[in-house]
Image (cartoon, rainbow, N blue to C red; front, side, top):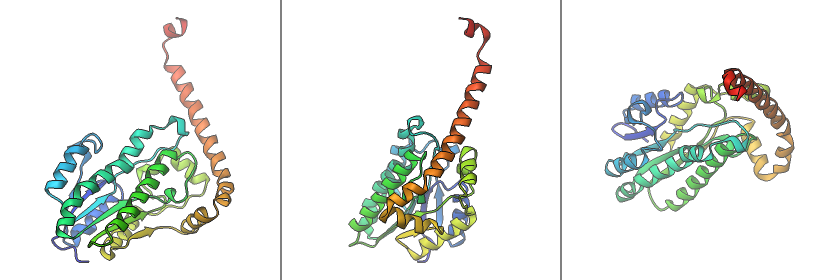
Length: 258
């Protein structure tokens, strides 16, 4: 697939993977429009407006890359916010571009998933659910569009060295020996998948093996991830205790007395 003159709209294009991916697309001659949070505001709150814009000016390629994850106990997670950005935004943007893509019988939609949707990890419940839902949406729509020239590509990377994997997540990843990929490498692989119009792309070994095992022998993965659960609990509990102590130090004495 040639990209010269092709129009692209991308969310997450200003992030760790997005910046080098946009560069690859532009170097190939594509005309790229990236949603800019700093200039255009939040994707979720501005979603209706963006959908109207994409309906009127439908790109040749839509790349749904924006997302974020939270590592915490399920009851502490803002599930609405996690699901909105990671699943509802790409689903709604996809809906917005479909009518004109169907009218011209061409187009490509790339949805950024995660290997955690294929290997569900403890303490990432909201993110796993959203990414698993996005994969189901992507697969169902790809089959729905089987009689057209509209192509869907689902990307499932493993951990990437971006700000999403800092702080507590970095500590958990280090102790559970998670392997990372560099953002520039992942961007290049995504670019190559777009050119080749691949339907499903998964990065990382042995993650691809674990995904197969989880689909066919989940009880084995259940057992194997108990150590990850224990490590996550230890780190979260330590972090929460430290937060509580810091909070106690900031409470005014008169508040304590009252």
